[in-house]
Image 1 (cartoon, rainbow, N blue to C red):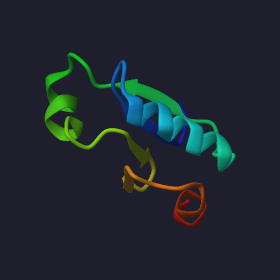
Image 2 (image 1 turned 120 degrees about the vertical axis):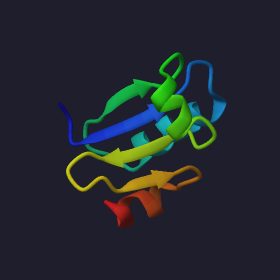
Image 3 (image 1 turned 30 degrees about the horizontal axis):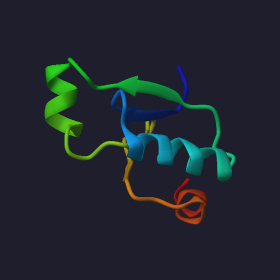
Image 4 (image 1 turned 90 degrees about the vertical axis):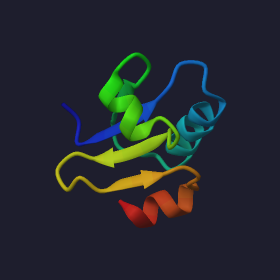
Length: 74
């Protein structure tokens, strides 16, 4: 399991943008978790996706984020 998780939805334009920012920032390897159909994840992240979470600390970075803010955050 990666130390980073990106929570996202299927067919999510903002999620696609977040993936591009992660690539631009040369983010470390991360796991993608799709919240669609998971009641608990929908309740937690439904209106916030995409969200990048650091698994060890539990810190979360909500969209919108830029490559610069992502580099500073991690």
